[in-house]
Length: 186
Image (spheres, rainbow, N blue to C red):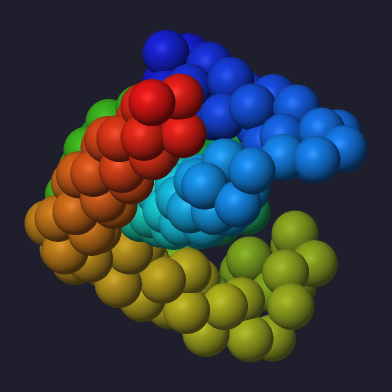
């Protein structure tokens, strides 16, 4: 709901409150106030629906960023840092252990995860013995990669359509409030 729509709701609530304070209001006025009150309730419900749709719209991007961050910080960075130190001088190790930036596309992170996992698998026991990695660090690594693949595969189109529908509903309900407000004043 935008600012203009919020002002319409506040004005309608003010009108409802004014009618409620009248001692001997004609039934025509109280009936109009009731219709206005119902229209305001419907508009507020539509606003809540729009807010929920807005949160749903942001959820896939947040999940994707979270999955990239977990994979990068908990798995790729430590393996790359320790691998560069442990295997310094091996041919091609620097390229194999190259880590993407956090803002890179998920595909870049997944490609890097594949390269780093090959090195980690090849030298698994050395990581466990020399760097105190847990026995199941590759399983945890694979779970983080799976989380990123899942988050990257989410279709945001459905959430976008839901938000668009909710925004249109808010617009319709505000128009209904305006009509009820005009009817109350006539």
